[in-house]
Image (cartoon, rainbow, N blue to C red):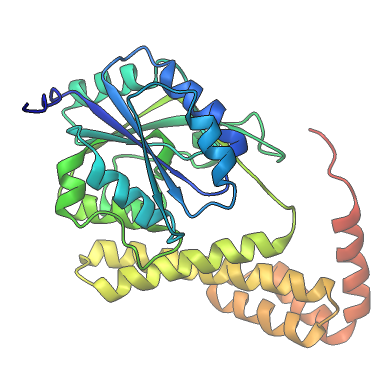
Length: 322
């Protein structure tokens, strides 16, 4: 018997899962509540330690949920496995701790059609134990202009993966997600798609909820900045940037180095590593001149203990509500 082929508007929803059983029911409930009916769901278990709990959750859902289990290899490998298994001509990505509004697929399908785009994305409400709870993604990263390789590199537009709906073939054509990147592989994919001429469109409508988890410590920020540098290194190694894209790339690289130096300086200052803090803050000054940094470097040379007390007091003082 020949398997019936899905129609051209059939969507494969790809959900990589790693130790996310506690959130999976909410995520899947939001997918199976969609007003748009033509979709399948593919959950990829990326070597989770909570596999038994995850599989108990998955048993509650309809037959159009497909399950793939693999050893832990990272989100890029998991998403690529989902892409290879997808039977739809369209694909949507959803992280295992995010959720969609019931009209997500319906509205994104309409946007895809009316804009004649290859890939669309939307805004999302942020939630979780964070000061950003209740704000939206595009409030924090306000999109400015069209999506191009240059605007992505200059961080004028940021794509939230859990709000993406796209034609599958262009993603396959550019080689899918780069499995050599443990983080930031989504940005890398959007950049390669933009370089390949893929048409993007976005809406400021809030169509998803995006969970944020923050420790409140600079270490998390430092790790994120280091991951950004790793992605930029991959972009540099790949080459092929136009002059305008190269300028945007360099601006982003300098900004990331500056922010990393600042966060490292703060961490070292709190640890009373004054020599290390001075080196980091001086490095930050190299990327952007600032009278505040001039003062900080001067204080680290003349009165480091006083600077530590001032900064420690500021960090320990609870932020006032605005």
